[in-house]
Image 1 (cartoon, rainbow, N blue to C red):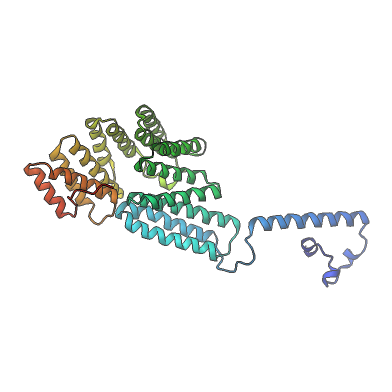
Image 2 (image 1 turned 45 degrees about the vertical axis):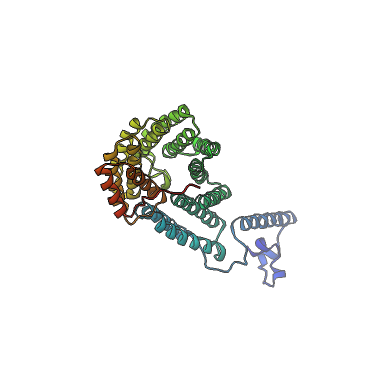
Length: 367
């Protein structure tokens, strides 16, 4: 084995050569042995070069158990985000990201573990991008999504790439970049078509509907919504769906349908879908429940249903106590400001209740 690995005869290495190896070897056999030894050395060298990081790394050994621990930490971030909002989730995600990056820079590990670590970095940046989006920090969200997309390309993870593109599409909608929103959603759809299951396809179709609607293509958005519903109906047996698609379901289809009606100027048609989305959300999604209820209040207010809008806004504000979400705060502020312009007892009571719950009623400055 030493001869094969090092390519040097045992005698030259200082070992006593067994008699069976020092005599009786035919020239042809010796040449064949040398060829085998050389091929073995080449194969071993290629294997070592492909799977082991440079020997200069002397830090703690990182293995599959560490990867599993990091994945468990990341899984817990979703619960923190849904129950407490962005601030707590951002702090927790940042802590996990620093731990993973420290393992990457200081640890010693095989190449497959390095790939897993890089994939975890991409997952964490995707999560941070969503948190920054929810906090209204567009620049930070774009940086995080770009980092996630780079990690996805480095490790060749198509579903991680789909997630990053989905987030970029949502962000582009908020930033009034319709072409970019549609392009990112379409790119995600092309990958999901061959690599994603029904759950992933449903999420991508919802993003496409949102992007197309923001671009004024309401017919295209309606077709995307139909596709999302079709894939949702097939997702019951989708056991391999990635964790970031767990939120997707009939609730999201209803909410996206309501958004489509709002974009089309059909507020009365949007209200039943928003009510359905609010009613279907379970206790695990308390942040989204408050957010969707605030959106329902907004649409009711714009539709002239003042008393109902006030009731929903107060319920949302009560449910959101202790949460941090810029989108939620903005929606509640919008309802409070609109209610302050209405000269009725119900509207005035609503404004006072919202103010007492920490909702700003002042007119926001425009950029």
